[in-house]
Image (cartoon, rainbow, N blue to C red):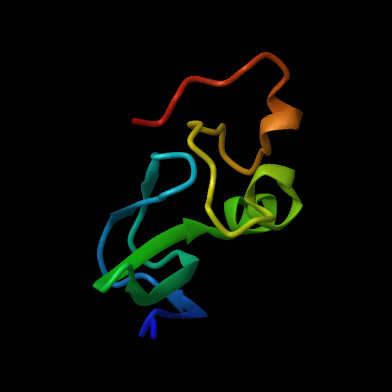
Length: 89
């Protein structure tokens, strides 16, 4: 049995962070989507710009829950970026 879980909530940052979608900075006192939980047995937490979190919901490559391997422009899906975006890793 998998103990994996995920919780998403809207929070205001108390320090600077980096968005997991576009890999750009999130300044202090910004409202973001904060995702925390357990993934493959490891506790994790991620921060996303609000518009990047919306893009995840629209991106067809994220529908399967596996996420996307590409680096995105802020608030854009793979399709909205045009040419094949660079690989994230």
